[in-house]
Image 1 (cartoon, rainbow, N blue to C red):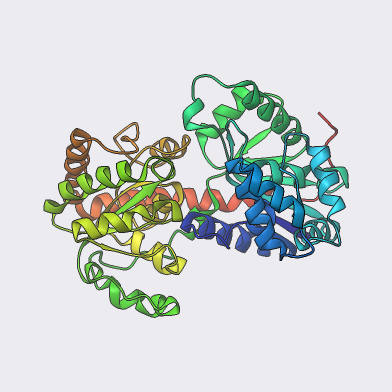
Image 2: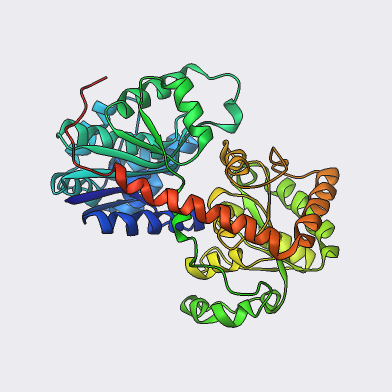
Length: 436
């Protein structure tokens, strides 16, 4: 069976994108031949072509022009090429993409991957968040799915989340409703595997016509591969060979007990100065816990943490850290604070207790339901003074609970890992479902 994998995000400067893409791709390779790969580079801002500028550069620039509504620069861009934003009209998107075949490498990659495959598997990941305006990556992914379905290829939308945006939990705009309608019509024709129970409930409420299957995130399949015997050991010595790939020196904190502070997909989108102040306050509250704080941006949106590190004198790691080294660091920490889905999964695989912060969707709320935690809702995206104190106290309790607590978390994650491997039970050639 030849499989085209869509949205392989292992090329992204994001630990979660890299980790879950590697995990899913590894499982797919056991199921069949991966005959084509459509990466994030082909999905983000790619309806663009210029005979004068490399398409990767022109496409990225055109995407920025659209987002910032810069008419004068837009005129200049139009003078050296052409670009069209992805829209909710998937047929128009498909036609525009087809017109770029033979001109833009991304278009060739997309159509070749679909045509040479027996089935198409989409790494849904965290893309299906209904927002206004719609996420360009979601529109692009849905367009590729529509092209594949119309070509008679079975499409499997797996490893996915379905969520309202953080800003639209209560009321949805007309645009969000239309995005939901388009997505539901498309998913009704696909095999759908969702990565968390909250997404299952959202889908049942918002897309009752779509048949869904619950399978934990593919990243849980890494259970048993990350933790070292005896937490607090010389993690630095064990991971330095991996860090050498990128010329990174292991932080001194890794020579003893350490506590990781990561970012949040919501914090990444607020005023940078406000985020820096909030995290500086949090770090100062955590200093007295014993383990050395270590700041880890797991996505470029978290890079404000480097300024937090400078102001507080705490060490940090770059987002370019090799993914297996990064995952091992999280899995062997004394504890972690994070508003990120996949890094929190990596931590759980070694039993690292994690206090969750808010996100841009229901991601961290879902993890609190899936893993054995007592706090039933995430703390604020930018913890207040009082929340920072509560986080410190909760982490103190988790650390004092010792190895028994770590074993409980790791065992729970291992169970989810076994369930995650059944995701491949959904991958089979089958006739394309009729148009909903």
